[in-house]
Length: 263
Image (cartoon, rainbow, N blue to C red; front, side):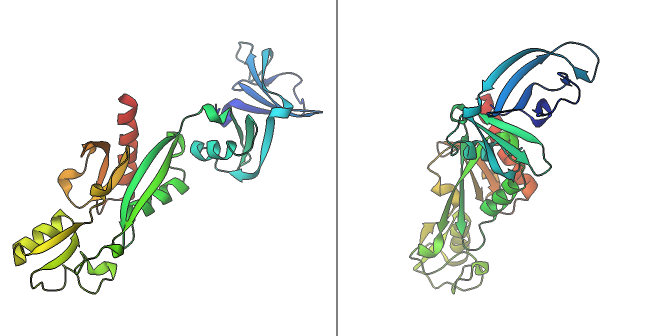
């Protein structure tokens, strides 16, 4: 359980007696023994401050801990991950703007793991963009965790690599081939070699999509026809183009989660 901060009140003093703000559904209540979490129901009316009709204690003082650092309280996945480490059923968090929320019984809240497939070198742009989007809170309400699978193609025993931008000494985009090479590349590199030099080569597949062995997943590929959310080689996931923008990558993640919820 993670309530929105607008439904949480902090009950230490009583400037309006026993009345609380009309949006309040939960109270973080300071007592002589510590902090407890209360669920409240309020009297009906049009007043901003309303009387409490019923109170139910969700967590007693010995079950509650305050997390010491300020956090992005809308990042539910992070809050759950932290709450699982505190050893208490309820962890209270304070935001950078001083708003409060709490996580109650984090072990009962399920996080979905989305597997990210990318390659280096050069920069793993999909993984890097996803990491930045996550840091900026754009996955806050999705309750997902990202697990990265990044293949280093420098470990492949090849003579030729796809692109000079990755810093390789011999690449398909600059150097001429003589035949018989071991090419580290994808289906596009395969097609280029065949069109320019014939069939005398061996290809080692570097496409992130070919590395997928978990679902749901998100991967990048240079083939536009593969860029969609759905089944890929028997696994469900989203494929974005090699040059996808942050907005396109964010949309792909949202579409992936929405599709899984429908399923």
